[in-house]
Structure formats: C-alpha cells, structure tokens
Image (cartoon, rainbow, N blue to C red; front, side):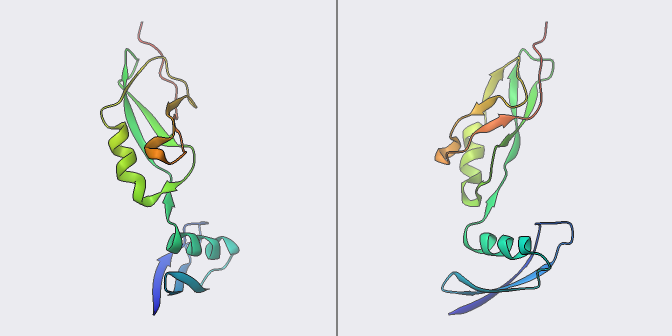
Length: 123
C-alpha cells in the first residue's frame, strides 16, 4: 500500500516542502529537498520521529523559582508525554549550574535532562 506525505523540512532555514512516498511504512522516495539534510530529515520524520524536549523544573532556595531544562539529545516523539510526566512536580535544590543533570535516563530513553542556565542559591 503506497502512501504520500507532505512535510516541511526543518533541517535548514530554507524550509523545503517535501513529498515522501511510503510503502508499508518504509520510505521509498523523497522529493523536493535542496540539500541532503532534507532527505535525511524526511526519512527520520516518517520512520522514527524525535524531538528535543524543553521545559522547566522548580528550584528550591534559588534566586529564581524555576530553571530551564532540556534533553541532551532527541527523544522519540511518542515518549514526550511520559518524559513530561516524570519531571512534573520535580523540584531541585539550588545552586544549579548549566549542564547539571536534572534527570538521568528520563522515561527509559537513555537520555538525560540537563539544566540550561545557572540558578544561584538564595542567600
């Protein structure tokens, strides 16, 4: 069974409109890309979509009450809700430094969530 999907590439600023032909969930053809990033993106997006997850976590005794966080690499798109559920209600103690691991192996993805900024301790 052949299926066609139209997606916009996010691999570079051009934003090519891609047409992906799939047969039994396998990519058979990609049209419309102007660079190889587009073809690579289309294949990945149609077979194993992933995203970088960004959010915030509460901070105890910090100069601010929240710290921005993100996954250190892509996670499967279908794991986003599970990852958010894991960090919901989480609170970390200041001081926090950019790059500190906030959650290891979030939702069993083998990917860590790290702080993206410093939050000094409130004195």
